[in-house]
Length: 299
Image 1 (cartoon, rainbow, N blue to C red):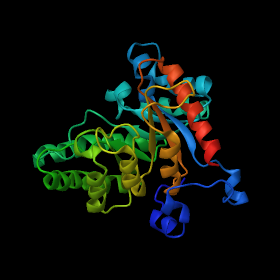
Image 2: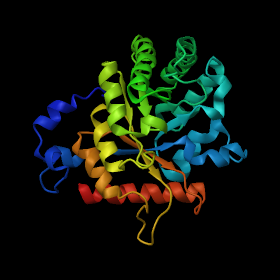
Image 3: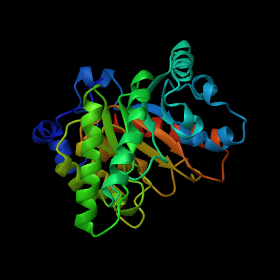
Image 4: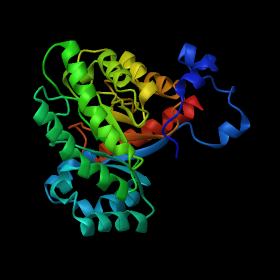
């Protein structure tokens, strides 16, 4: 699985990328044999079930395969927060996933400090606290950990601070061939222009983005995803509510996935359901159905 795609080469040779459209009938026979993108499940989609004890973290992968027919996941560190260095626990997680044929792509990391903290000592401490998750992710078969780029200060000050923390962590991750990817997840990270500038400042191939369809606040989500896709190593299909036709009410999935595909991305798109009207299970099913419909439309 390749995650260091040179998207500039793709864009240079693709008129589809210029228009932002995927036109049915222009794909080669070989391209038509493989899906435009693959579908995975982000563990946070089931956080209420896990938090209430209805679903144990160890059973997440088997439940994902049996209930949804999905064979790849993005883990969230909260359900096993104190277990990153527990070799037996991580090994059992990997075995459980392998036993049911479920692969892992990313661990979403929260609660380990701010990588862009203005205090140099706190920033370095956060970097150190994230390292164990890089190692755990590798053992679980992931290619990346997802981090946050929280900081304080002016636009430029936060850019510099976030880039510094990300660079330090990414340099460590590179030693074991892992990636560090940043989600638009509040603050200036929800500004696509700012986060893409952070990536350009870090200048490391293993430091990238995880564009989330729904975490842009007042920022134009379509513009934001377009700005982050050149650095994307994973994508999060955030969903909340659906209309009678099964379309997501906040994001035009066809429009958004055209942007994703036009950027040359064909890897996993992770379902992240955060709605309240449907149960978590029903919400994941609805999101998967929509992603399949969109994939068929664009193919």
